[in-house]
Image (tube, rainbow, N blue to C red; front, top):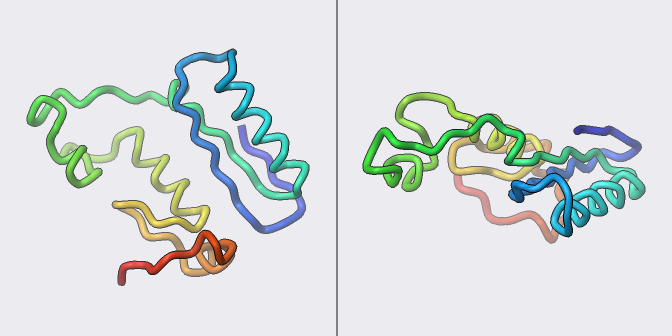
Length: 115
């Protein structure tokens, strides 16, 4: 679910609950609506809706995925999520945010970036 409104700030909500109803979902939905009302662009990702599988290929699931946040067998479901995080201005282990997107972050959200 994505919605764009009147200002340039991008917000990404990531919900990890497997439930489609309940307190966690209500909280995520309330945050989503508040961000929309504030005039920002927002996307809500529900991890349970993503097509993710547990890694069973290397070191019993404790291999490159855990240590380097990269699947040695190529892109996985988390790859797209990391790209979306980078698009909001935050760097991930695998993707560096665009300098313009990073500059749009409020000062309290900016940090010393790796070169």
